[in-house]
Length: 496
View 1: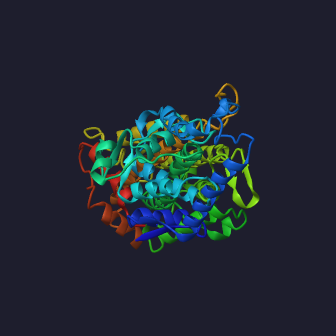
View 2: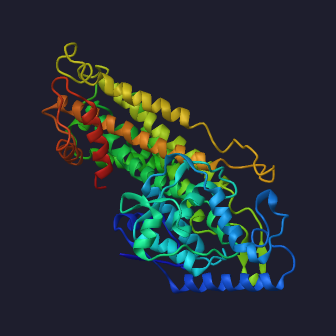
């Protein structure tokens, strides 16, 4: 599959998922090439005709914006910028996120407002296509003047040929790789270093990854909820459409409809219930899962605008004959919604953990800790501990990053978004929520076996049948972490 980068076709989350799943190669479309060349040529002419300084083009950066740079030093200025800003620390950014950073930076350049050379944009395309992924680190971005630090670490090997990369999954020195491929470092022209480092592609890449994961987890949460509801001998009335039409939040209606669909044909859901109500973790699941769905949809709308925008600085507008130093690199739009997305995912995990607890609590005919001989066997006692520990960590991670700011660059950058931290913590919350849901699935499938000979719905019975190919029924105590890890992998590989 070939994906053509063009300003005429917005990059959607669905399209990005296709690019990932089909291992697509990229190419710059004719419109993108035309715009990139037009902007670069305009900027070259502008520098020759305009006497006033142009920020980041003929001046220093940040609080050094009032220092003019001689024309013969402009290339070195841009190279120095990339080298000096590559200050990433902490854990490495996952390679799948680095690849998204490359994709989104190329998309940013295709609009023709950044002033980069065509060769610079093409080098990023070549890196993406050949699976050359620079080593980038998670810590260092304030999410304000763009993601300066992680983008510098991205561009240092990709453009300047310095540092380390992963090539087809193997870590190597980029200089050796350049020699093998016959590549030479790109000689940066005016403004290019700034275009490479300014921008929100670190935050955006994490946001895209987390959203794709969130959309998947939202669907799986409804499936696992339905299985737990049947295994718990729960009531279906709280999921009736007529009930939700009197409070018609879209996500709430969608969740209730999903549960009705997944439990359709179940013997368990239809049988007489002795209890009048279910606990909130079941009865209020449409409201909680639905609120998460609505949040995911809103965050997606913001992120899709962001990834189809030019977010570096200054913005070069050839048709208007203007080079404007503005604030499109500021990460506040992303920082806020990444905090919001983390909260939504955390709540999916919190309600899932509560359902897991209900299943092991010796209620409604289910044995203590879901084993036939509790006492001699601890059964499913400790998987719930693990889920509770992870849920608690999520709550701690959900302290908003976007309300914090520490001024930088001699107070020129006096309010920053902390969107980089919001991005990396949202990624962690997404991974944690997947683990909590996997533990609920582990428990729900176990609990269902104590309802035999009654059966659940055809859909849920098939779900359990597929799950049993990787995780068996636990009759006596076993080493449980392997089952939990297998459950996580099952969710990651499940066809939806």
